[in-house]
Amino acid sequence: MRPRGTGARESSDLPAPGAGCRPYRLAVLVSGRGSNLQAILDAIAAGTLHAIVVGVFSDRAEAQALQRARAAGVHAEALSPRDFPSRAAFDQALFARIDAVAPDLIVCAGYMRLIDATALAPRAGRIINIHPSLLPAFKGLHTHRQALRAGVREHGASVHFVTPDLDGGPLIAQVRVPVEPCDSEASLAARVLAREHPLLVASLRLFAAARVTLDEDGVHVDAHALTAALQLSCNDAFA
Ligand code: GRF
Image 1 (tube, helix red, strand yellow):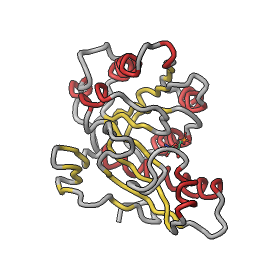
Image 2 (image 1 turned 120 degrees about the vertical axis):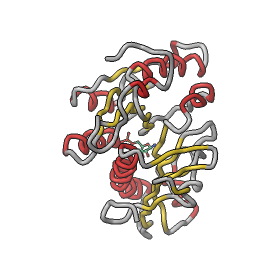
Image 3 (image 1 turned 135 degrees about the horizontal axis):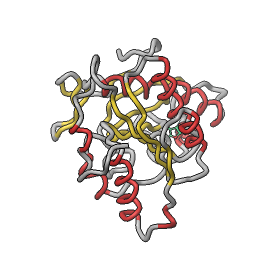
Image 4 (image 1 turned 90 degrees about the vertical axis):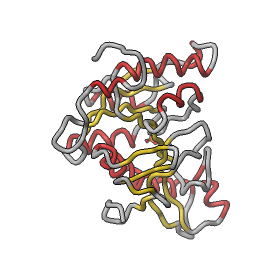
């Protein structure tokens, strides 16, 4: 592990990531099952994502995702929010640990805790989240229930930059999933989850190739401003 440095930009000490260069360094934040983390680990192992997971961090020691990380030989640790007097104090401790592994990108993959604005500000453009809805529709929890109650015919998942606005940061990419008349919350969740995994991996491939940036004008892909989220097609490529 690299020594701790002064802040969130430690990975800039390293050579640039990208094709033919060093693997892109990912820190992954998790709270539960960890199927999205597993999709990342599997893509790396299969050689379809030129990246390395340099650490997995959780607010829940019992998260299955931590076991998945350890089984893959990845550094994994949990901090309990109960051991800290405030959200800001918890996040300060958490992100000090994350900084120590010098990630290029921090990926919230089923991380169920709000992140304090003071932790986000110095890392703007370096934290993304995957959310199981077609944002801006159905923010927050129970998105599949929300979708069924709203009677929508199409649901899906979104990858977006994390800002203090809950599930409201700039969109990067989405995948669309039909809602079937007979769907239950569980069947819809399963169908969306199966598409979340390729969406996240395809999005990370863009980051690993240094093709995505965020600045004050918004998201850019290949230096072109995104006017709408990229859409993952059924062959797992962006249309
Ligand atoms: C996923 O649906 C993700 O989009 C949401 O929480 C769920 C986590 O699943 N934020 P897993 O822990 O990756 O299996």
